[in-house]
Length: 44
Image 1 (cartoon, one colour):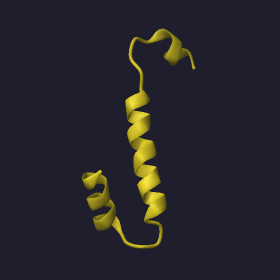
Image 2 (cartoon, rainbow, N blue to C red):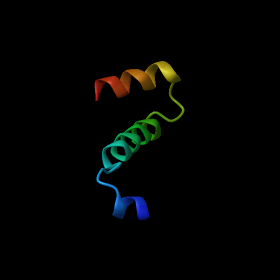
Image 3 (spheres, rainbow, N blue to C red):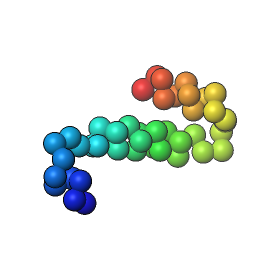
Image 4 (cartoon, rainbow, N blue to C red):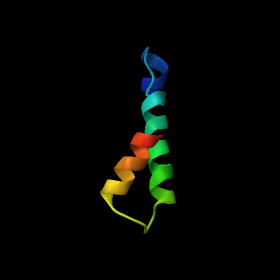
């Protein structure tokens, strides 16, 4: 919490990327392995 108030930079873009990857993983749950997940991330 204090880092968000004291530092000049934000980790918002990183958190957004992580949330996007988690969303893709939820969509692909049970369908395929790492290969398909990698392709979906690269396509978006």
